[in-house]
Length: 594
Image 1 (cartoon, one colour):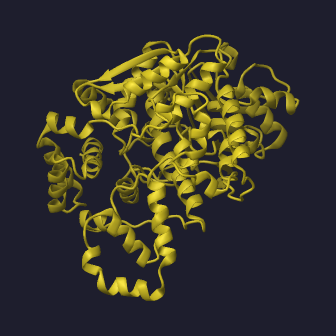
Image 2 (cartoon, rainbow, N blue to C red; image 1 turned 120 degrees about the vertical axis):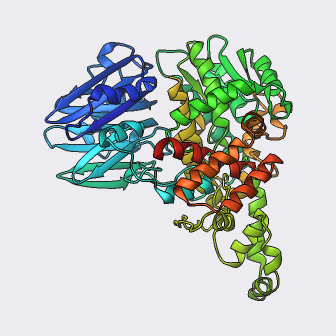
Image 3 (cartoon, rainbow, N blue to C red; image 1 turned 180 degrees about the vertical axis):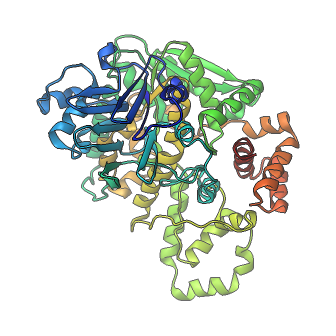
């Protein structure tokens, strides 16, 4: 919806410069407000209550608010909480709830949000982020000076220098596509973790969690589970149609986006707009035929976008700027091109299917790793010792399966997340001295653990940050019905054997059969893949390697022999993700530190 920025001291740079960085996130209005050397800025993408009275910073009764996102249940909150309102906006609801409950209202909100409240009388900052990380919030705090923003660049502008490289963030990125927890690539600049809030009062900054996923099982009947999922998903889609602008729908042709689009089409009084992307030449990556089948079935106004190599290269340059720091998902380039097209069609908001795979076990990896957990449980102490003593040479092979066996024998977490790229062993080979960091302790049940850690890492850090930054850089907001907290809470109440079933997304597919063709429900999952490796090698050839080596000559973190090995593998379409991560980081490093 918007871009926000604020600080509690007078910077050397003018607030207008900071708002320039946030322009694409909110091209419809930009405003600032200053009180007692506390400065707040806001750029608006008008979606709910288009009237200028809903512009921000919003100030009522000595409360200042800058807010990015949407509160989908704001009308219910107005009625249920008997709130006195001067506008028709969801923004004002946050102020009124703060006045009523202090910082104890966050679990009442159903939405995607990052906001900051400044209580003028108390000289207190209260900042919060939504449960799963749909909207970003970065901050810097040192010697009492506090800066926050939707993006990193405004903070760097305030600091008037590029902070040192955070090597822990680099190590996390190479393993998981992106930095984890509160890390960014810049030392001192942090991101507020999902489902958390900040209170800054009398020079003391405190961060607390307000929401945790609970895994107690209460649903053991197939029909009850299906009925509840369908009801909540339908309500979640309906809630995300709130606003005063048209809502479109991303349609890949997979089960998730197809089901959302089909349900949406049943609510809409007219044909909905659906959007898909494909690639010229590389048909094995394209899902356009599946999307067209669904679009025809639901009678949507369907838009196909074709990405070619030149489009890809042009968008690749855009991504380096819009993502602000290295991000390992190459599908971001296709998303950027698609969102640019959506913007040109005059659509500001689209529904998207993120969250379904993590909640309803849509990745085939889940079954594979569940077998590893069962194997671990079947081993006697003698068998573990025997394997450790006699299979060391076999386990030294560079493949992920041997890595997982080693984790079993060393009592390490087997599953660290869907998007894990560099294994521990590979990072040891790459780094001259590998930075270390802690991984969360697994929950007892492996199904709950895999779902939970993917919501936290793969979804919360990788997918949602990618989608938000790229879509908003094109002035398009995405909404995620599967991440309605009511649906997330429900999914973790369902018995895991029931959820696992005999197929990926077993429960969801039984619902989908009512809405979309069986050929879509039963198709093999492809994922949002692109011919990024082929196109990069055709376009840049050996310059890919020379770029990585040039950056390494400056930072001297990696082993040059291993870099060349990964490059050679990538020319044969092997370990291509590994080399892409290095290349992406190297371009960013050269731009920022040389």
